[in-house]
Amino acid sequence: MQIKSTIRRAVEITLDRLIKLGDWLAMQWAIWLGRWRYMWSRMRGPLARGIPFYLAMLGALAGLALYDYLTPPPEPLTSRDVENILAEAMASATPEPAYSALVYQAILPSIVYIKTFDAPPGNGDVAQAATLESAQSMTAVSYQNAARVQQGDGGDEPNEEEDFGLGAGVIINEDGVILTALHLVATAGDIEITFADGTETTAEIVGAEPENDIAVLQPGLLPELFLPATLGNPGAVQVGDEAYVVGHPLDLQASMSAGVISGLDRTYHFSHTAQDLTGLIQFDAAVNSGNSGGPLLNRYGQVIGIVTGLVNPTNQGVFIGVGMAVPIDVAASGVGGGPAY
Image 1 (tube, rainbow, N blue to C red):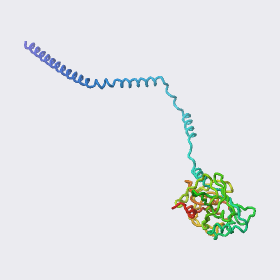
Image 2 (image 1 turned 45 degrees about the vertical axis):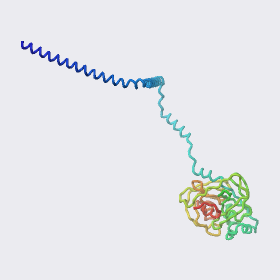
Image 3 (image 1 turned 120 degrees about the vertical axis):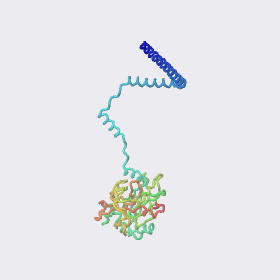
Image 4 (image 1 turned 60 degrees about the vertical axis):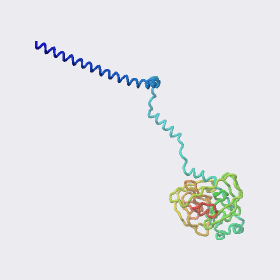
């Protein structure tokens, strides 16, 4: 009897615990269900409003998947295809122009071609006295030799067949004033000027600096369009800088040569001057007969000097690697309106 009573008691305790567990589970389910209903009531509105967006996204994804399925993938590039693409890209690329080309384009409208004709015998000194009182210290013999040097005979012996000289000049302001080498025009009876556009006229000497071999010319007629050169700062020039010369060597008009600045503040006595020229810029860009009076330029196309001559110990008038130019601040100092440094 005692055993049965113990078993019955155990069963009753177990059932009671099961009932309590069931009540607890029912209570937890009710709590969870209440929370879910509360969350659903709060999320139902936003979810309902976002249904069109979600449908659109699903449609887009489906469209992309369909396009990817129907469109075959591109063929992979071969090494030959890559080489062809690179070759086409390099062929179509336009390289920047060289500095020398930009310099030439900048100065060309400002360059003039000068042709001089000797004055009749005995009249050269009279003509110069009338126009160049400041040049009286320069002997007529020196300038006559210079004219022959321009023709390439070195100026050692007279040449009666050659009665003209060739050289260059550069327009430096809006009035059309031209700077050139004095030895080119000092004994000339007539000075003919040809501008870059082909306009031809005569010119007169309106100023001279014999101590610097510089002449200032005023043309009788200006072209409708002309462009004064941009004057640079020779004080900023350093040995090794690029140097360009534009002139008419050997009557080859508007020719350009390139080199470097070889030295500064040089002093030299040319056969066409009565005294030493000082403060000169030395360069190795080629100059020959016809370059005198033309511009020496920097890499920006700015005039930094006026070519006065070449140095050749044989006096043959042939370029051997040494040219000289008067700094532009010195050359333009007598014009008025030159650059202020």
